[in-house]
Amino acid sequence: MNKVSIAIATYNGAKYLKEQLDSIYTQTLLPFEVIVCDDGSIDETIKILEEFKELKGLKYFINPIKLGFFRNFEKAITLCAGDLIALSDQDDYWLPNKLERLVNEIGASDLICSDAILIDANNNIIQESYFNYQNLFPYSDDLFLNIFFNNYVTGCTILFKNKLLENALPMPDIRYHDQWLGLVASKQGGVKFLNEKLIFYRQHLNNDTGSHQFISMNEKIKNLYQSISKRKILKSKISIISKEIKQILASKIGLNEYEKKLLKNSIIYYENRMRFWINPICVFYGLKYNKVYFGYYDSIFKRIFASFGTLFF
Image 1 (cartoon, rainbow, N blue to C red):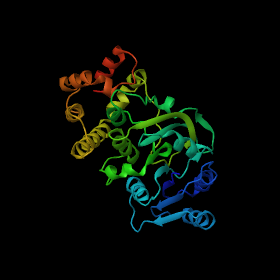
Image 2 (spheres, rainbow, N blue to C red):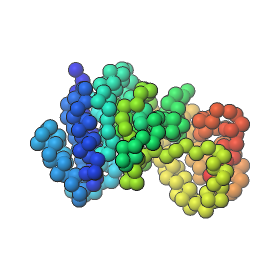
Image 3 (cartoon, rainbow, N blue to C red):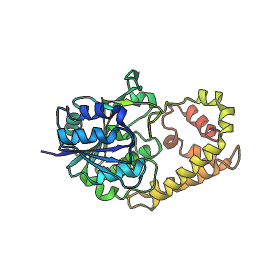
């Protein structure tokens, strides 16, 4: 029988941590181990971890220097010994059958993820479906490209096979550890989406990551002037995206020639977006790769409009 490790990264998470750990230790399929790496909490987090260590055998490690969200999760993952590894945030709440459903459904895939119910800081339901709220589509002709440009692999919903780490570690300097795991899995045993809501995914001001509602093109037009005033932020974001693409191109993830070409052209596309208000290079690549960049639009007209719209937004 597969042994399941749970990896958790904590930092000043005392407010919701006990509730989350209770939901993990009352699963219908209990984990083999729970590994927690703390990034220097100064609230009651360590006290809670110590209580669960004594009561449930939880293992926790305190970082001597602050690693940050991404590297803290990477460290927690490397300490896991189970055949399967699930990631957990410090402030969510799992439905009792989460682990059992993911373990039963992962099959031949290297990674599986699910939908989630969004809740606020007071446990009120915000949205019944994270995927609908984000306008995410987990199916694509090219799984790798879909995950890179429209990532739907959300860390708190995933379970993956330990063997995935052979090619996933060390992680490159990109923003999201869960996206990287999804990208590696897409080039190996594949990624499976389970269309079930298995966690309450909490949204509050202190989230390191979280949901961001999909913004329609009409709403983007209404916010045109506000977007123009934020071009410095956009420029910084584009610089980060370009850097990430270069990191992935330099990795040994196993890209095919089409993916390499598209990513290289995407660097040109993103880096030219800030040079002119109307940039022929951006329009050309925006139209050429509109299904990849803007696949969430259900009509050709909307995708074409989006190709021009991204010059402004």
